[in-house]
Length: 303
Image (cartoon, rainbow, N blue to C red; front, side, top):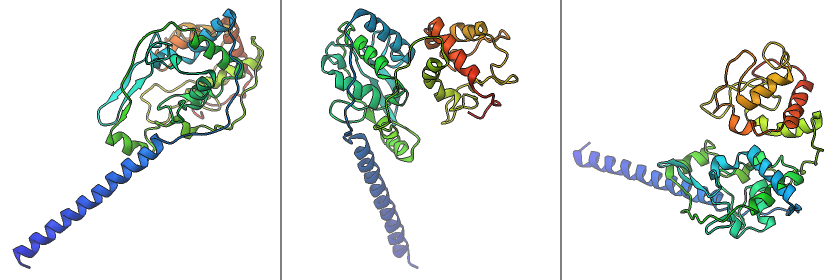
């Protein structure tokens, strides 16, 4: 084989590689754009939004328990939430009625779609919006939360559009970057029933919905899936060896309020979000404790 023929083979090989790379790149952008720009449609939820001061104050309590300020900032005026070069540059939006804020242009139905369904007024999915957690909010709590959001003072804060880089698009297509929350939600799921507020097992079951993300569907704890760099979650069932079987209500309250376990160990404040859990009222803590105590004991790690 002559040098000229070898050179043609090498050039041809690299041209094929370039063509394959171009096709793969085009497919990645086309497919990821289709998911990022998809318009979502589903039956509208009608949620009554109160206007009285007590309901608005209660909505502030709901917001504290949901950790809205963790993403959108202490004044809810938004911020750069995630900046991973080549992956995503993600902004948590301004929620106030100021310039650039959702409150300046959202109607009640828009708030419901955004919070419960992770969908913007134009039908696009809201990226990284944790609506899978908010779907468990009943209409009473969601309505109060919206009322409180609408009452926030105006703050002008406008941000650029979120951008997803090539690596982020590849990760999205591989399923390792769950950006489009609307894809993971059952938009026709029954809405949670309103439960009377009080230190009851039923109300505790409602409140405990937000604990499943870390502690698992059975609340038995263990390693948190998805590559999360976080301490394993604890067993919340009344197992006497690894759970809360020997805990008193006072023990549970101390864990929720200051992160201290009965043996005196203080939990990591990242793994256990004390900033949020300390906002629970005494009745809410008692309700959670009653519910967890009512569960069948399970060994640690089953989630």
